[in-house]
Image 1 (cartoon, rainbow, N blue to C red):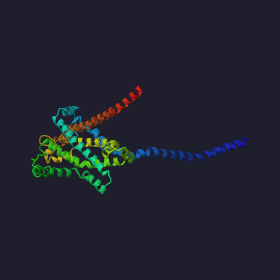
Image 2 (image 1 turned 90 degrees about the vertical axis):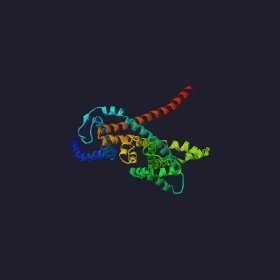
Image 3 (image 1 turned 45 degrees about the vertical axis):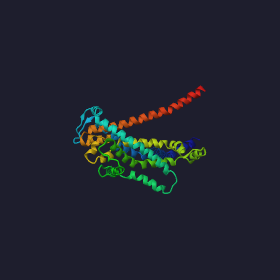
Image 4 (image 1 turned 30 degrees about the vertical axis):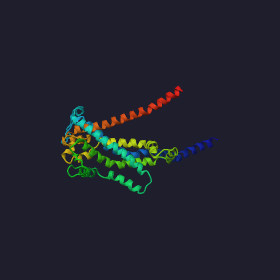
Amino acid sequence: MATSTTKARAGAGRERPSRRPGGAGRRRGALLHRLDVKGAPYAFVAPFFVVFAAFSFYPLVYTSWISLHRVELATLDVMEWVAFDNYVELWDDSRFWNALSNTLTIGVLSTVPQLLMALGLAHLLNYRMRGSLFFRVASLVPYATSVGAAALVFTMLYERDFGMINWALGSAGIDPVNWEADKWPAQAAISSIVIWRWTGYNALLYLAAMQAIPADRYEAAAIDGASRWKQFTHVTVPGIRSTIVFTIVLSTIGATQLFGEPLIFGQGPNGVTGGADNQYQTLGLLLYEEGWKNYQMGRSATVAWAMFLLLVAGFVAQRLIKRLSTGRPRFRSRSRSRTS
């Protein structure tokens, strides 16, 4: 019995080395499988974050650092620490408030008609009609056109002496308008360029959202006797509410960063200053003027950060208003249930 037990122990001891390579291989395979399952998603999204860190996050941080210094364009390596003096000077600068006012007015003049026209155009394209594909592609052509080409064409249309628009006004017995020199005509002209370029793009976004709405909702509304207009207001608009919010956010960001259209509309040195009296100078033009005309990169970075903070403040205010507006009905319903 003793010999058999010793032989069994010896046999078991001999079999262990043969199992070790298999166990190590299994553990290695399990480890690779775990890395593949858990690490592959991070590997796929890593290029985006690398590019974002290099071309978005780092410039944002570096711009904030420059805004706390006095830096000139010719000597970017020479910085003088001034803390928040650039922000204080910007707060007291009347040009900043004028540019902010012009940015808000041009943004309203371009965003509101643009989104309303895009919503109506998408509603028309959502119906079955001949050549619908052609009209959808045609609505995207203005977006594919470069800013320079579109601004140059509209600048010639709004030209004071030989422009087609003043010619049409003269044919109707209306005196010609100096579109570039006057404040409100200039802002309306710039807004028309933005409307022409972005209406079709937003219309296609609305169209894609409309086509995702189930047809059962329209059928139920039609059975209840709802007209086309009521179906649009009670089914279509609530069904694409998230897309509408998305386009409002995009349009707000684009209006805040408006630069190419007013720059080319000025036709020369007045384009940088937004006209002789800064009548249509936006925050983007003020940023360019401070950095590349006055060579003050610190003040230019300060304007950039002021634009960023304004956008953040606007979005925070929008979220607070939305939360308060959606929270009140819930509170009322709860209070009614308790009283009942």
